[in-house]
Image 1 (tube, one colour):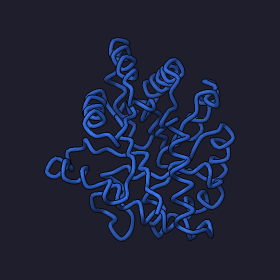
Image 2 (image 1 turned 90 degrees about the vertical axis):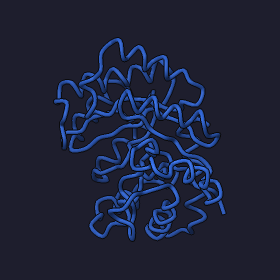
Image 3 (image 1 turned 90 degrees about the horizontal axis):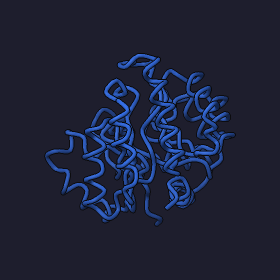
Image 4 (image 1 turned 45 degrees about the vertical axis):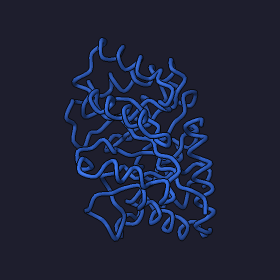
Length: 256
């Protein structure tokens, strides 16, 4: 059985403080071959890099989530640029726009989204994009930044299949996780059915968004098997075919 690649996790989150080492050491024995831990703030970029330094099978993406962009300065961007030279940093992320919580304000979010896209281009790395309730502005900024030349993934995809087509046409991957198993996830199921299997990657966003029947509890990479099962049913293919495609796609996305 092909191993799974969790393309988006947050194992530096405090909810793992009690059993982090035990859980992470067990992942290879549970069929998890690789994990990309993703930074969301300057401080979590530090803890994310530390995990990648500690575990062979953990890589990192480094960037500042839209909700934390108010903390950014040109000085901190220079620090981030230096961090992105780290050998196991495979992407700039997670970056983007979040108008649902909107902690930083639209203009600040847009400014630093664009700056971090420029950083990815300079570093030659793909991007991990977080976009919530901000489809049009996300598309507009990505178009202006010629993101088809940068590449990456739309993490935790939450829009329609019409919007998915725009991102797929840019050459981006669609990140799908536990939400696919929710009974009310009709829109995501339509996207999963529509998107070619060679453009889909699996992710947990753990500790968040655990799949059914664990919804509301702490998520972890092992629970990706439930997403595999749901995706196989939607696509009308075997779970092993989903595993093989997702493994190959994740390596292509992160250029491993």
